[in-house]
Length: 71
Image 1 (tube, rainbow, N blue to C red):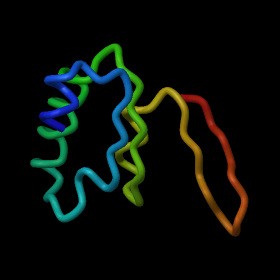
Image 2: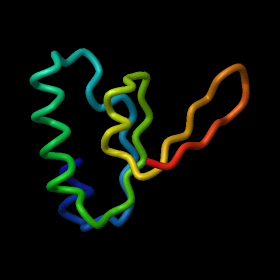
Image 3: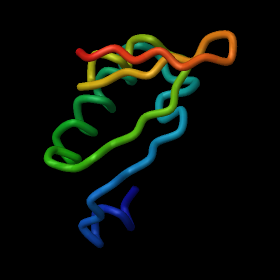
Image 4: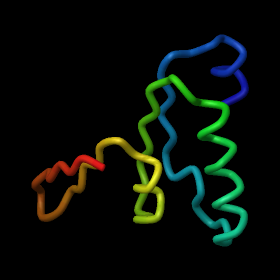
């Protein structure tokens, strides 16, 4: 994360960024993600439905099919 921010990377891929965090810490961390990554493309891979609140577009994979929803 730090290297990407220092290099001003335009795209970030975050795989399970809030795994094993309590809800309060997850909220603080995601709020900070939103601030630091504003204006960049961020792909979040997660099992947590709560993270969809951050997304412009959500892709769900279910029974080997991909479903798209716009937020």
